[in-house]
Length: 215
Image 1 (cartoon, helix red, strand yellow):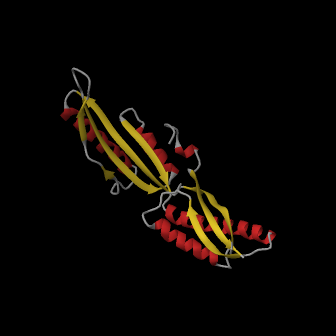
Image 2: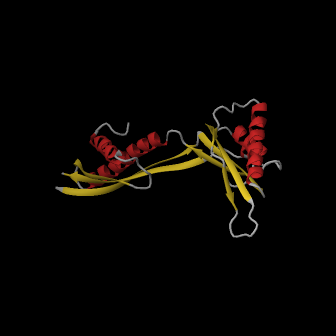
Image 3: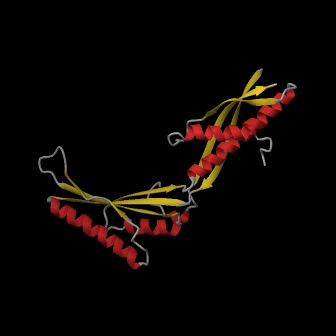
């Protein structure tokens, strides 16, 4: 029985719908207690500003306080830090507000903004199905040109660019094999302001290699 391998690709450009914002307050003082006190005051003042503007701060995740001594100096200062994290719907105005407050001269912070997709696993499942359909279209065209038809699937190989949960790759391959057999197939860059930008876009892609049996 003849065999053939085709490569299928499914890709989309999608807008992030969630964001994780982490703000690390920092202080450098001679005494550890002074550094820690300043960090706590910065954190409380920041949250107070948000609350005063009408934002719910109940869902804020607060990290542990950390205090350490500087290294490689005869008179080390104490470095204190405390991080808080917001996880929210992707709202440009909210992100912009956080950045405006955090970048004020009254705070010493490290700020990280990480947009992400809440349904990335589901999206990649759909992209894998699209990749399978793409691979099958190519296989059918090539087989028809040679006077052959698809008899079945010998093997499906997933691209490893997407990180699968343990066991998911095998389960997904089984689902893709069902799609193959279905004749009805085919149905943050600096302190700039986020409000001046569009939504963060991610290019998501899945690639599969399918070895077909021909007759």
